[in-house]
Image (cartoon, rainbow, N blue to C red; front, side):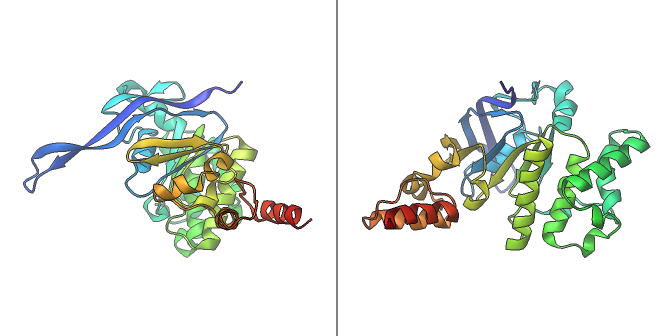
Length: 286
């Protein structure tokens, strides 16, 4: 039985509201009574439109933000406990939207080595970690390249390698493909899946691209600071109308099956891939 790497209990986060002079005049609730459990080794996706609370949630998992009320535990450590913050950040690495904000080295391998070096890791082990991380994200061939010469997808894979080199048990990716073209998005999502399935790293993907989550073990949908829905991708995307009500799309092939069903064709719920659609269509034709 798997243990939980992440657990939140009645998590609340309020941002202060200030007037033009910087005086606090109230607060804005970004997370409201959020209870989430994430198993070690799983691939979990968190969906939501802008302002739903998903990025605020992500920042709690690396102790960038602290709960206003409630608790967050990462690998058994309380993120609110000052003495546990170092352990929390070693357990859970963060990857953000813009890789340029995380890449600081002039050569790829030096950038990947930066994190372990600052952790005080011995030189030989640093380079063992760099080799491991670059192979894990399939960027070893570019190790001596300048990050400035890489594509957006390649840069993001280097940013992920920099986190992997610090050997976290969990990686949180906050909309890592938001600034990428379709090719870059495909590269990064393939890398994420590889790290999860092959390397056993827990992955938490924060995104608003529905097609990126169809292979997730579990999906949480956030709306108005709360967890609105949770379940497997198939369970979530079987509720097309509810997702549309809260301002979210569904994968294109799921949308097509939904529209056909509305027109009286008995397509089953929860179709996620083109292969599933073709199989279902073939069944109907027969």
